[in-house]
Length: 187
Image (tube, rainbow, N blue to C red; front, top):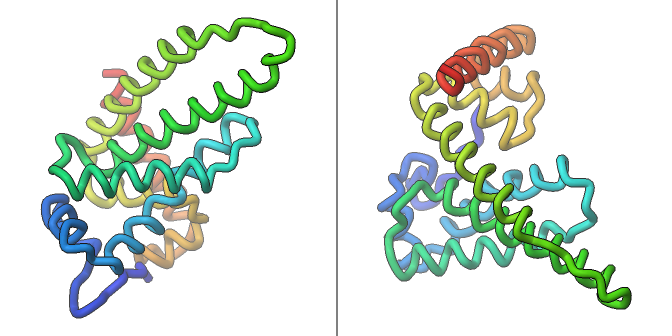
C-alpha cells in the first residue's frame, strides 16, 4: 500500500512541480515537511558509496534550504529531484573536501580539487542522462526503480506498495526495467 500524505484533501504526490513551488511560496509547512521526508533517502544514498564520515543530515538540511529558497524565489528550470540531487552532491563533495583540507592543514599539503570537480561534472552529466532515460520508461518501471534505489525499499515492501503478488515478481520486474533502462542509456 502506497503511503500518501493527505492534508486538507490535498494529495501532495499528485501536485505538479509548479503547484509545489506555489505551495512553498504560500509557506505550506505540511508540504515542506512532505518534501523533506520524500527526498531524505536520496541524501543517504551518498553515504552508501563514499565511505567518508560526513554528517549527511547536516548536508541534507543545508541542501534542502537551498531548494526551498529557490522554489520560494523563482521556478526551477529542472525537476525538483534533479536540482536537489545536484545541491546535495555539491554540498557533500564540499564537506569531503573540507574534511580532507582539515586533515592536511598541518602538513601544508596541497589538495587538488580540480580532478574532483571534473569527476563531479562527468558524474552529473551521466546522472542527467540516466534521469532523462528513466523518464522514457513506463510509469510502473519508474516507480519500481525509484522505490528500490531512491527510497531503499525491500522487494517485499515494493510488492505491498504496488500490488504485486510477491517479492519475486517485483525482482523480475526490476530486472526487466533495469535491462530496458540500460538499453536506452547505452543504445
